[in-house]
Length: 180
Image (cartoon, rainbow, N blue to C red; front, side, top):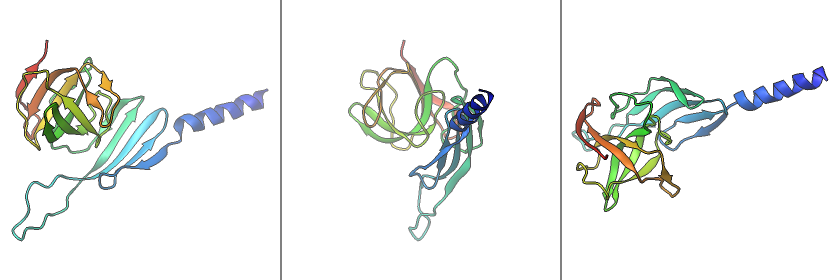
């Protein structure tokens, strides 16, 4: 009986603690996923803003580590062009960059998961057609707060936006719109 308990404990710890690596298509990020924790070894391409004198783009990478235990970020040294000013523990949010605009709102690239439910590098449709919202251009940084509900589609859609904060490169809020 004691031997069975020991074997069960070993199997349970292996199940909870052994990570499964997966590679993301963002330039080389590796995601180690276990039930109790996630580790991102980030090595992703940095967006090129302009070419040099001969018209060639220089390839730059963003490097770092993100460690999450039970879904909470406990370590993050990844530089982001779109940083958020302050975490809000009550409202789900994420930080991202506008990839394209459309009649419903805009398609966004998630640059920081915040406390929402999106992974870094994931594309998300942010529906703002119901709001009189701030204007967005491709490449703009923002912080989106929402009610936590997401439409199960591809790409996922944030339907009930509670606040949109357009930020500058340093993360300071430039323009904001809150829905009551």
